[in-house]
Image 1 (cartoon, rainbow, N blue to C red):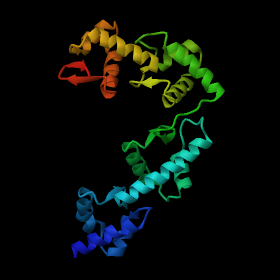
Image 2 (cartoon, rainbow, N blue to C red):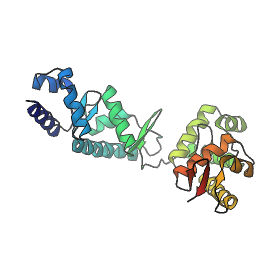
Image 3 (cartoon, rainbow, N blue to C red):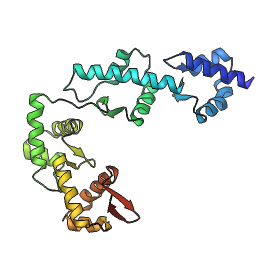
Length: 254
């Protein structure tokens, strides 16, 4: 009987590209969610089922749905090249899926974890999409980039940039997000930003300092005449980008 129920669930999710709700499965199998709990858990562990807040999908159907969703998102991006983010619900409607609420949130989180999209406070975007700033955005972004590049490592935070340029902090934070989206700004912590040019210069300084030998975060901090506020997130970024590797309390160049 249990095998029959498993087969029924797998057949249902295989037949429906939108996913199947727990309620529908329970109604079809005449079982309660509690009675099906162990079966759902086992199918998840075996990689035969994916769960999204009560919505169940077969892995291959999830991949197909993800491709369709990303295609719709790409078309929206192309129609709005200067938009920093797209409302996820708009992409869902465009792709024809009925997802909403927690189910949508979980699916988007999975797509993000799989490296297909990026989620921001004001929406989402394709991971591969590069925003095209408007003339007004371009002008402000250039000013912000120029101000960042006045420093080698101890760059100004958003509030300091806002004060220096006489522009509201909210506008600076938004243009920094846009700069990150356009690959013209790199964020290494909540308040520390660099440009790609600065990062390359810092890599050169780190390489010259290390001379092929292991070094500690404190050693680099002193060598760069900076503080942990800057050197720690910079090192974390260099680790993640494959420039350095952490070994115990020290790091070395790769």
